[in-house]
Image (cartoon, rainbow, N blue to C red; front, side, top):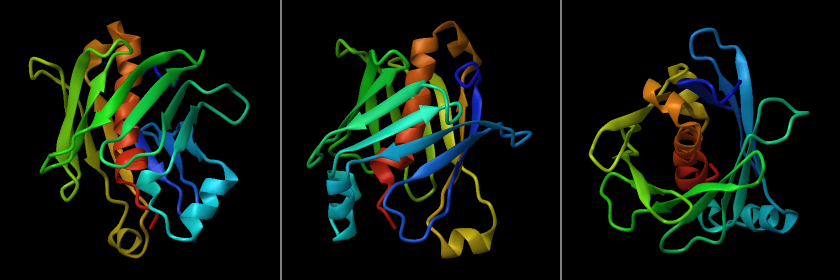
Length: 198
């Protein structure tokens, strides 16, 4: 199953003038498909994107499924975003498992990870240039990393497609809710916080 793993290869699907994003979730060793993440937004917001409104300020929903016929295993939602983004994560039963808050003043970029009640459980820090991010708990222990994976210079040069690896600490298997939240956090780095629509 998708959530019973510790490593994921995320591969963005290339599209010309696409208004929504879709990412394949693969086994990083075998390239076997594990699922996908697809952006779902209302037609009105697609129109706003088309005429130049920033992707990062408009509401978006990301649905993560194992295949086209199954219910979502994770749903990521962001409302209108101006100074600080709040992104809420739901499980397959549409129950909130936590949320992310972007950092207002951060040189490297990143956000905090919270339980539904508000307690902060992790930090996601890194830099957009090197595309290396670390997920750490409140004691500084590393819970996971997200690293850019290049698929060839020509593809990276002529498209905005992103490929990256999410690696979670094996100890998270004892806490599936936190593992799901951190998988969502890894996806949110690119899809929700960084994606500019280019």
